Length: 396
Image (cartoon, rainbow, N blue to C red; front, side, top):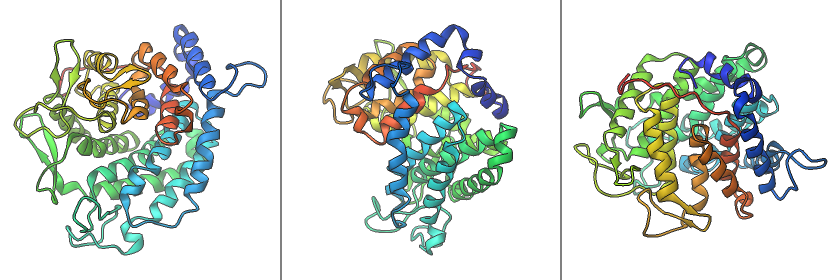
């Protein structure tokens, strides 16, 4: 979407038929296939559910069940659980502007906020203070610590909700107070990690340093936080965060490797001074792919040519067949460990009809409709209109 938040979401709000008349047929066909994936006869026939009905039938009970649970002192459970449902709701809200999703987004966000450390008086042992984020004792040998990746996963959808609401006067009138509150939650949470940002090592690069690991975070972890920064900037211009996003995007781009088939591959945790030679798993890679697509839509570092290389990665190395999905972005080796995660690459479908069609077909597998994290988010991504990529020179 365009870098300007208001224009970007108005761009979506105009609707598929108005903004993209030449592609409407493809979009409707895609929606019909998604409907079929839920075991329905066909999209548009009498008695048949739409893709949104399918989405609702899956996501609504999951949200209602989640908000009945007690608070948790393990932020990772939310980051790798309810954050996916929250993101799915927000993306569907952005795609449809249907106000029925807003109360669910608010309800789930408020439940998540109850588990924040300051609400429970939990002390971050590494920072030696109570923070406005969600700490965990996982991956730290039992020490309580708020990971930047968990913060990013949790609050990016909250900030994106605020951006959608603030872009539309009618939504602002109805949900403005909720949007302001959720944006404040997001801003307070990412501020916990302000002193972890570093510039370098390249001239235009930046990265996130982890006080527990005492080194830079893996790519997906720092880019999860960067997505939250970008969403905050969409909702409320924040030049500091925009600059950081740009530098992290350049850091990532400089560590991508071009293979003989033209595909991009990358390591899970490349060194500061190079690209590394391993391959990230497709589940964590979904965060990086989504970040690259978002940056391209905002005119930040990544161009359509970069996304075209990711399209090659998707087709030539990842989704080889319905029952042959590579475990890593490099392809080969092991398969099908993270099959459903490929749906979280769905934002690429906004840029390439071939990706949209392939993921739609993949979502028709009976096993996918029982998945409650990647599948709803995938449907939400596939419900977004084709994107307007804003190509600019790298670093701008």
